[in-house]
Length: 237
Image (cartoon, rainbow, N blue to C red):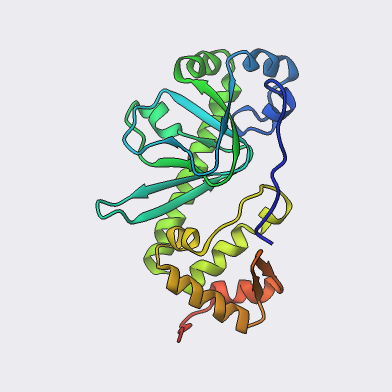
């Protein structure tokens, strides 16, 4: 089910948690102890905005628990979710490294715990620990690849294919983050309307790939869902 409980994170900055953050993978215990001194903790309420599109960027954030949706809003108010950052991922990298404003807004999709580091402190950490710089490059490259895939899917994929791929992508939420997607969230992620997402879910339910309940979506057969994700010429009534 895409409906889970959050695990609370207590206490001060935890070096064990830092080990799972993309920027600090592979750092020694001594390095993490030093890096910990540059980092502070931020608790974010559900639906609270962390960064608004166009804001100046002076802080890099790491998701410790919960999830942050990264999204852009059109002049007409239409929302397109680019990504939902989960445990261990960074947000706000682009503005930190290119010096420009935030290219997207970021808001908590559930109660979320963040670790944060100021730009000047990140610069000091990168100069002191080259491994962090390499990890940062890897994180940015992953983001470019992910965003390129999103553009391709929005350009060429049918809605039902995109919804199926979205469900496959986030099946791992069953074991971890407390995030529950609404149909409107899903529509904003696949670049369609809530009505088309609803039709897509009904189609997948008819195909015995999933079951929808008041608590969320239950995947019944991942193989059928994979087939739908790759299918060509699916027409929804």
